[in-house]
Structures are given as C-alpha cells and as structure tokens.
Image (cartoon, rainbow over all chains, first blue to last red; front, side, top):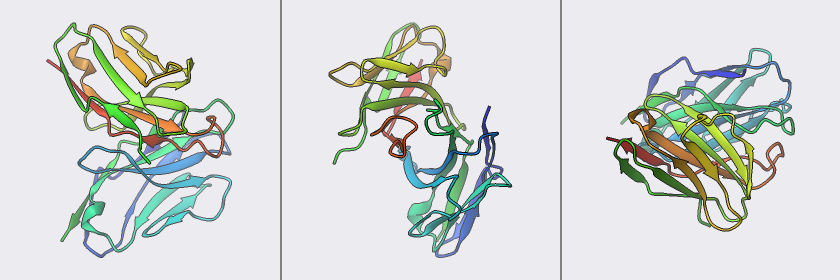
Length: 117
Length: 117
C-alpha cells in the first residue's frame, strides 16, 4: 500500500520569505500523480499544485513550486514571497497509476504553516 | 462557476441517530468521492461513486455507513446509529472525467463537521 509521510508537523516563515515543506512517499508504481492541497482555518481543501510522475519538469503555479525527485520519492513544496494568507495546513497527496483502478487520494498527516508578520 | 457544495456545514447528532450528509458536485462533474478527516489527521478515502453506481467502497466501514449518487440530485453519505467515534469532518470531492484520466483532479467541497453527543 502507498504511504505518504510529512515529517514536519509545524513550520513557520517570515512574511515575504521562502519556505519549503517536505513530503516523501512510498510506492512500487512508476506512473502516478502527486498533489499539494492547502487547508486554511475555514477547513476548505484547496488544490495548490499537481505533478505527473512521468514529467521530469517540476510543476510551478505562481509563488508555489515543487521539487520532484522521483528516485528519492520526494515531493517538496516551495512557497516564495510568503504571504499571511498562506497560513494553513498543507497536505501532500498521492494517487496511483491512471487507468489502473486507483481512485483514491492518499494523504499525509499535514504540515501546519504559520506566517509571521 | 459554483464549486462543490456540501450541506449541512455542521451537524450535531445524539448517539443512535442517523446522519445524512449531502454533496452536489461541480457543474459538469459526474464523479464523486467521500473522505473522512479525524482530528489531527489527513483525509482518508471512503468511497467513489459515479451516477447510480458505487465504483469503489473499499474505505467504507462495513456497517452503518452507506453512500449513493442518484441519477438526479446530490450524493448522500448516510451514517446510521451514529457513535461518538463517527465525529469527524466529512469531505466530498468531484472530478470531471473518468478516474484514471488526465482530467480527474479532485476538487473538494467545504466539508461537513459531524459532532456526535
């Protein structure tokens, strides 16, 4: 079974600075998707960024980018120019090979990010 | 363009009562997923449905829990004879395409927080 590990229960960053959240996963598959979701205090789950395992290029969405290391099974999220609105729980998630009956997202336990003004 | 709608947002039940949670997917989405989030945990997959069909219910408890997604109307997650351990946030997600395709990113609703007294 696939597992997702987020080893940092809590992180903090100064406003306007850069922070990196770590995620590792365990899988025997070669093709899969990885995601970062943000959960602010409102509890809404918001998709931040998505990466296909077959793509070598790291995904980027504005101030958010990932460092995807397939061999190391590592998928970290970098937030640049941190803003107060970035304060939230961040969840890393894995979904297995498309078309192979893998429907569910497997989530890590989350990293709580605080942004210091 | 309305997102995934869930209601109620908060639900309080006494032990032994029934809880019904509703989820309306995004417009154009015909695939629905339910997840449960216990305190201090990530989300755990429960069930995946398409219109009138349960595709994968491997994460559903064997007793007291059921889900449906009728041809018309929202998807319903039903919990019979609730117990205190059922207290959690229940999230619904929807996707536009068949799971396993490139268009099946899951978009989440705001969740229903169930409290069992």
